Length: 87
Image (tube, rainbow, N blue to C red; front, top):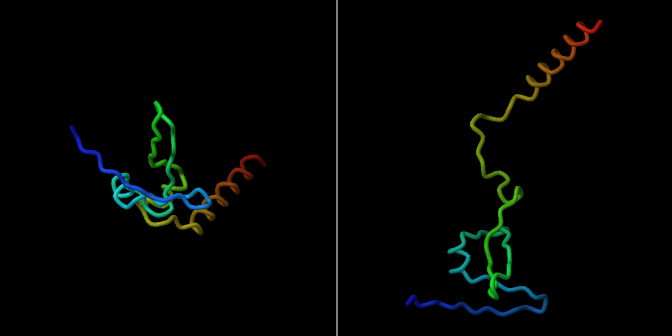
């Protein structure tokens, strides 16, 4: 039989609780992460959620940022060529 460790915390007047450090570490939670609460079979389940905002900036680009001046010049050239063809 596995021994279950319990953690106790207090609910604030606003209904907030602090997730104990051991639980945050177990779930891999960091500051500003979001969690989901669900009721499943009479038990409350808490799990990390994933969202675009949560993951924003975590994926590193393969290349340096694009040269926007070069991209703009290429776009303008393409538009100019299209106008010439349509004339």
